Amino acid sequence: MANLVYKRVSTDQQSTDRQNLVLDEAGIDEPLMFEEEAGTSSRLHPLERPKFGELLTYARPGDTVHISEMFRLVRGTGHILDVLDVLHRARLALRIHDGAFSAMDLTARHPRTGELLSTVKFMVQTLAAAGELQRDLQRELTYDGLRAAEAKGNKGGRRPAVPTDKTDAVRTAYLEGRSIAALARDHDVSRGAIRTAVADLLPEYTAVDAGTPAELLVVLDMPGKVADFLRAADLAPVERTALDQGVTVRRGQGYTLRVSATPTVHRQLLAHCQPLDGAPGTSAIPAQRKARREYANRVNDLGE
Image (cartoon, rainbow, N blue to C red):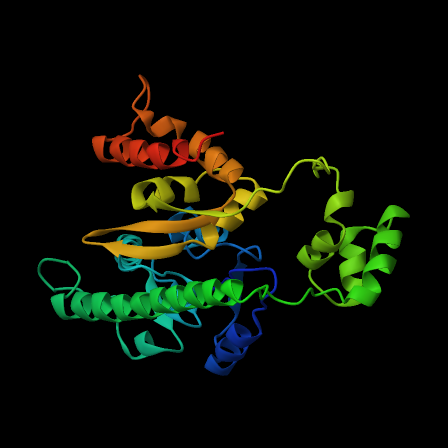
């Protein structure tokens, strides 16, 4: 029986050090590692993530899936139940080594019906909902704090990972042919930090005419069904960042994603939703078509 270990971090600024510590302390026998690329969003459904897909393909009945804590694998309640159902059908055990779920047997099923025990389902939904509420409140407080800081003329955001006094050296080295990966190693920062420092030197960079005013960020509410569709779409980095940094706002049984982006990015995101317009040959359901129309109306109100 194999021990399959799954690890993930949400950004390339993070490391798996804490996960490694928890998993090492667990003393897992001959672990087989499946680690997502850094920056794999927690909003992407676990069953759509490349490495977790590889894990499920590799797994055989009786194997055990190990994670340091539940939220390395899933975030929302629906995702948890989806994953538990897949693991049950594949006859795989799930072992969580830290956090609220570590003391629970999440694979417990009714001996006759084979369904997830109602008590387990209740606890999973309750703990997941509590965690989701905490994260949403944190996002809302962060958003309100940034707005208050902007009103006072303060610019938010982290300090650049590459110090200002080293930026010129990084840019010169890049122009001389030094790779982004090598520069990241030289300065002990992430590749993303180097890309930020040399952004205007990259091949995909599009210069902005000095006489053209920069676009201001606009906050629009994106229906949840549109956001769910876009998370699985092939987006440009700036589009993916806008989506990942959106603030979830609960609306009854659903939600909207409060996205802060330039009008251009909003229009680009809308363009990606074309399959939801209900054209012949598409599989969009009425609720998705309605959600796209709502988002289209909000984007179109921005004008050109």
